[in-house]
Length: 183
Image (cartoon, rainbow, N blue to C red; front, side, top):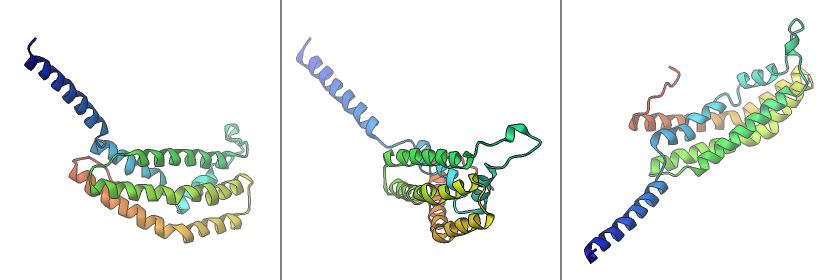
């Protein structure tokens, strides 16, 4: 084997190693990025709304003529606990996203801030609401908690969520990602 062939093989090997490292360090595909940073936020689109409060409260309803509806007394808390776990996993995935460019960086920051806004509220206010629901607490006490959540966080959540969705729509269109936006 002459020096040129040996050098070519060595050069090719180095090039191959560098290419593998480069492509493994590149950003996510646009579809994967979209799914993690934007689509997963559908899980919180009802935050600070009467729909979410009703859903949590419905976890505790029993029907006398349906034996399988008998509750243990911790269904609402379990529901919120599971949602918190899911949201924390989603936030972790968003934080681990690699980005390529200002647009993806901005979307990642918006998504991160949205999760960082709602997770503490789920851990504190919504968990207190769930405990009240499981304990069959008074409707007026439940309404006070829900109204407080809406007043403290509703506007900020809605603004951040809408900004993320606007960026998400533009990102999806730019990258040819087919999305049904509920229209």
